[in-house]
Amino acid sequence: MMSMPPSRRGSARFALAIAVLGLLAAQPALARKSDRQQEMQVAAKNFDGFQKPNSVSTLTGNVVITQGTLKATGAQAKVYFDADTQISRVVITGNPAHLEQLDDNGNLMLGDAATLDYDNLKGIAVLSGNASVTQKGRGEARGDRLTYNTETSQMTGESAGDGLVHMTFKPKPQPAATPAPASSSSTPQGQP
Image: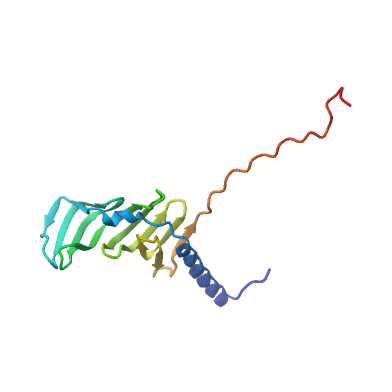
């Protein structure tokens, strides 16, 4: 077995990380498409703001935001309204801010970070600060910043710290092998 020089090993690891991210993106488990057509429900201990064109409202204390199977929680949220007074963006902070959603197959995606910036119009969640995203049955990703597309389940990531985005990929479960039938190599006694 040949050993690569250190500079080539780093390049190989980088290429492998890019290839792995490409594989994750190429095999998406699509997020529940009907979620974006649902009402957005918002609850918190305190509320400061109003629903007015191009305004921002602030929620604090046990913030819970739901839209279909999409659920986000945190300590504080800023809700941004567009010119048509529709919710365009929600920025949640917490210890950690949390995001979860089911895909169309009923699989759960979980995300945690210091800050969660959710673009309601594009269905994009950006998790920043000790971010992690876990897709049940598929694996997980950790980094300083992860971007998750709630429509396609595509993720991208970047990291400062040790310079690496860490990922774990789970193999697809295989059906259990059926045992081979016992072979009859000898003839029962008393028979020709």
